[in-house]
Length: 213
Image (cartoon, rainbow, N blue to C red; front, side, top):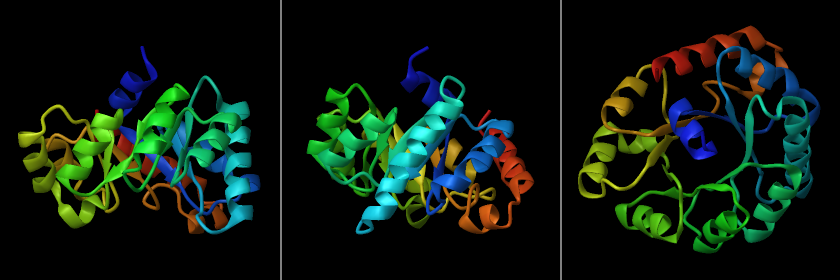
């Protein structure tokens, strides 16, 4: 099975933001126990040290979980960040925006590309540039009906819903034809990690993975 097909089958990508590299392994262990297989570790624009720590996290997670889980980089805004993430071991690249240079370079590196879009024009531009899945962000502001409408006109697109997806609405997004989901603080939050409430992370992971089966 290809990595892309595995991602489409799994549907859930856990977004980890703001968790330091020294704290990230037990959080990802909890995700794995709950059935999550894809993890996005985000850059933090404007914070050079935090961006370096993102790369450390990716490298640590690849060493610890490689072959069992798939690790990618998020909030990727430049070709340079794609290169750095690839060197650290990222298998997929996720962005909040449509940057065709980032998309094309991601594909040149042999990685899965999930750029962000908000409008149908942006989504189609990203797709034509080589995106594997187009991340619609923030999904919660748009609602499931938006995805259904975009899919009706642009049925070739694979769409991911990110931002505002919760236990209460994930079923509606699935029914609208969403292909994958990025789940942030509803899975892994800085607060949960600080409290070392890894059972809570595992339970949330189990809920979301079961919800999309």
